[in-house]
Image (cartoon, rainbow, N blue to C red; front, side):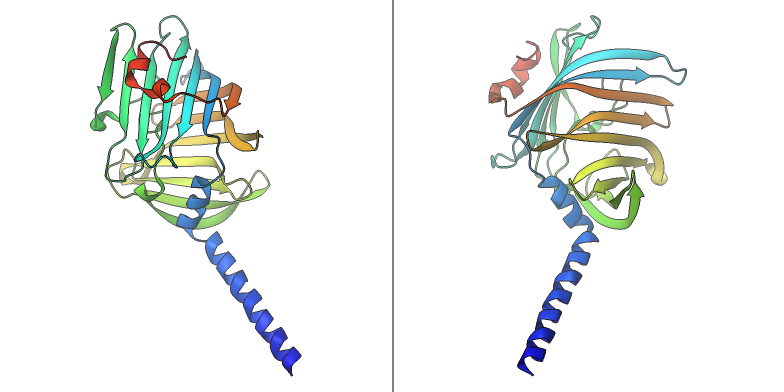
Length: 264
């Protein structure tokens, strides 16, 4: 009888573990927390090519450098800092954008842009964060990182995507946002997001982002993005040409005074 009771108890433990696991799989916040806690480098440097494609198929090409640093463990109220610098073509060379993404849901991210034609660094107001950046289909808000608790996350369903069963999560902002909601497809193997749908007023689908990810140095990073702007009938394609992790970037790289110097 002891063995039978022991087997029954062990079965209950396994059943409880299975139920807990299933609940976690279907918990929108837990899914997005796993994405948020995915291992990341301390910092990252990317060189990338942007292709801006209009409804007639005409392309404009941009060459950029992107500097990023993780601030989650710094206890300074930030999630990350990101600097984007354009190297080509000549008419946009040295244009730069800097964002400090805040971790407090009640505080706006801080954004600056440098326009070399004006030789001036400008602070971007919070009500301008829905403006498109440098003719692309990314808004200033898209280029920042959202803290986990800036949104309410709800599990919608599981769905096959490129032969992988993805977890589909709806994220609705708890404060001001250019979007009414975002629907995200999460790959549970790598905790990366392969597709995002952006919905505007009236839950109208405005944009779709498709992302391809690659692993290097033990970290997952995106190396190909396609942002389709359905309202503009315009598309921005970003291809990463080179990536460097844990480069030891100094914090002054991410200071507004760096913008006019074009970064390192």
